[in-house]
Image (cartoon, rainbow, N blue to C red; front, side, top):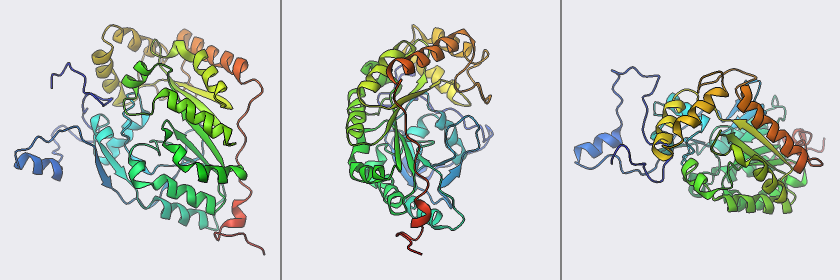
Length: 357
């Protein structure tokens, strides 16, 4: 493949070096070694599913500017291929690249439902909303095959425990039966990510995700069944989707969403190099303009890890974006609000059924 030709069907166009390994460190992979020995092409752009066995599945979120206390991820890596995804960096902890490896080597946690149930049964556990997909999408393509997310929702329902979901995949509608049951006790909140109303933009930013029209339809169906939906306008990228804020908010509201939230793109760790390579290949005419505007939102750097400013940025461009979002909330969500999830029922159901005494 010509290095200047975009790799179709993927977001990242390269594998950047893993920062946790020295350049001299040899990384071996049995699958790739086999392909080389057999004279086959090792890189055929296919997704590999690798089963892993974590000891726990729910993580406490320590970051003070993230709106969640606990998260869980049934999968590590994500085939959606969103080029801006902050979760790419976490793939390096597993010994892989944040680039193409993140999209093509998906680690599957089949024990997630069992581990979740063990936690929810503990006497010491106090109910807090647990967010599915705090890192990678729980309804990515792998879920259609493994159904780990559905099995986890069954556990949440069994123990009457609150759960929130972040996704950009219409596959969530497969589990409408469980979501409706959870919503009866105010135990579920859905956050649907919609970054653009343009299919052309969606295809290059998020190559293996559900179409925009299907996502808006999903918001409409969930809302019609009484399941509260918040739309994530995240991330806002200057000169790529920043001009769509008001139209995105209106479309979300018209589809039944109860609120919107946003972040301004930040390109931490390996994502800076991955995004820069991608935009020069896919949007060469505006590449430098976009990169410079992102830097203007983060103190002159693509990388921003500062609590308090990293999510919404600083400077004139960031101020304009944040002001537009506030205007959109006032215009389209003035009398709407996401409900607070119910944490009171779980203590009565720790044994899997209602405790009478």
